[in-house]
Image (cartoon, rainbow, N blue to C red):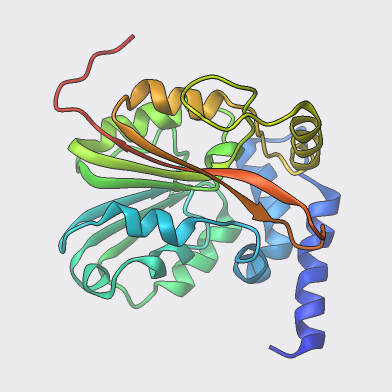
Length: 248
C-alpha cells in the first residue's frame, strides 16, 4: 500500500473513532454504523493497536482436528494466526453481531470449507457442538452482557476445553490481577475508550476468574498509534473448563 493510501485508510478509521459509537439504537445497529465506514481498513489499523493476539493463539497449543469457536470474531482475521496444520484439519465457527465486519469475514474465508460464519449475539449463540477452544479477542470489552457471554462460552466448551481472552482492561487492585493501575491511568483510558463503546473496568476479568478458577493470566501494555509514548494495559487469559462445574 502506498503512503498516500495508508494515510487515507488511517483517516477513515480515525474519523470513525472520533465520531464514536452511535447511541439510541440496538446494539447490532450501533456496531454496524460504527464499523461500516472503516470495515475495509479495520485489520491494518488495528494490527498496530491490538497486542497479544498471536501469543494468545500460540498459548492454546491445540492439536490437529481441534474445534474452535470465536465469539466477536469481527473480520475473521484471527483465524490466520492458527498453525497451518490446524487450519487444514480443524473446524472453526466465527460468530459476530456486526453485518459490516461479517461481510469482510465471509470474503476472507470464502474458500475454506471448514469455516462457518454466523451472525449472532455472543451471549445467545447456541450449537449442539462442544468446542475444544473458545476465543474472544478484543470483543468482551464491547459486549454489554459480558457475564452472559462468558457463561455461554463456558457452556459451549467441552470439559477440559480452553477459553482464551485478550482485551484491554483497568485494575484498581486485588486478585486475580497482579498489576494495579493508578487513578490517572484508569481515568484517562476509561474515558478515552468509552467514546467508542469500550468499557475498561475490571468486571470482565473478575467474572472470567470466577468462572474459570484454573487459569493463566498475563498482563501487558500496548503502544497506541498516534498517541506517542502512551500505552494501554491489556491482559491475556486462558481458562480451563473443569470436568465438574460448581456454580456460585
